[in-house]
Length: 333
Image (cartoon, rainbow, N blue to C red):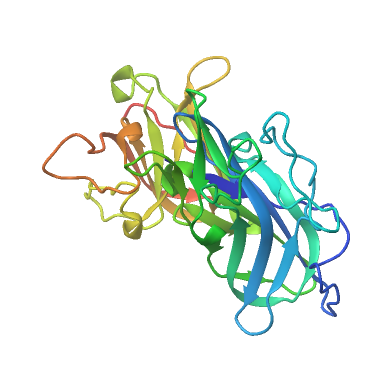
């Protein structure tokens, strides 16, 4: 199952890091969330309490809900009759984000124009409260971080160590560095075998610089996939495959070029299409996968069975993604 993203906001909210607002080089950072849809659930509510950035050399900087934008916005995640607890200063302990509300190129801003030290950073950490912890529950027993399935059953969302750790990035001097954390929930959120809770992993969560990304979208001809596009997805690979090699890996084989996926959905006015936001600029191989819903993000394809092998209808090699929007259609060959 896939998960979510962050995007930038250009409106300042005042202040810098909670304890450090003095930067002679005037570097600033903004952050927002975005997501790629996931199957069989209608809410993915994450309780975000802290964001920290860790320089290669120097002191880490962090922000709590006191600096978050729209802290009163809960995306409809707070259970009826319950309230988000507050700290001694009256600030909410966390801010809710329902990742499913920000698909494609849409996003939810969380930090805007925060003063930071420019330079190389080894990591960004998102503190997201683990829904399995009894201390992270409302009085009615609802987990702070949770997933609501299509059958309306609510299950805790596990976030190991209450943190997601994202990859290295650079903050430029004398300007605004705007980032998006894109959650590909099909890839980063899984339902373990006991099925009593979901688990969120950093795999499939991408931190991107908004000046280096584009939206990729296109139409998919109705006659493709034997005219059955109900389970179809478009897969992106940023490691270009050799000519003639049609053994494109599934989501579980992330070390072999798999980048992200986007579902094929009905379009207003008829036909089918797809959209994936916050794609890094560059070259990609793309495939139309007819049975993407069977792809397990943990278990790789088993060559001895056809139960989970991907059915690829069409391959587009070396597609160039440029800003702000790149259109790539899938039509009969």
